[in-house]
Length: 282
Image (cartoon, rainbow, N blue to C red; front, top):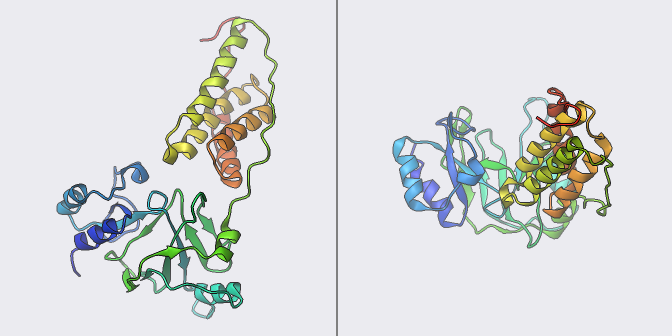
């Protein structure tokens, strides 16, 4: 198979942010972390990466302003209904615009669309229907020029990626966060209370000062930290959740994604309860 470097450069020339995936796989190489932040359109960096070995190609959909509709094929040989069939049914006669298209290693289809201006779409699994997933903010797809055990990823329509049609954008639009509400946690005025106030303010600031592509990670880390104090019965969980949701709303996190991230962080924090000594904070 042709070396993947030209494909990685071609994707970058379209403005798509690429990063290496381990040869023959769909995951980054061992030790390659923060792939979304490292994904790039810089030809020099791309040549340096792919000069080391013929990595597969990851395309970070968020920084690339893409939403990719993944139309899968059934793993059950008795199931003849594909993701493409589901999309046609879903369209109900509405246009499915021609756009940049890739055949996946398993014989499915990736439809590349650009995200409507001012819209932040999250990844979905089955939201649109049977055998349809999407990759957008926080996600990536295996790019053309890659090879996995089931076959190559190959371009079947080299057209420019066109805007996501309105009828699909409406179905994928995240539910808005509820109106921001004033949240008050009564803690007193002793040194312990002062410490808790500072801890809350620090975690909220962690979220609101995080870079655009780091909002979800910052929200998770804040939920873990405050979740430890909730588990230690230092802070009330409902109010902490509301504070974190307010911070998520301030940076534009989708409501469903924010809720899941907060719940996950609080659960992780609960595994290491933290209790402050009376009068002082260690």
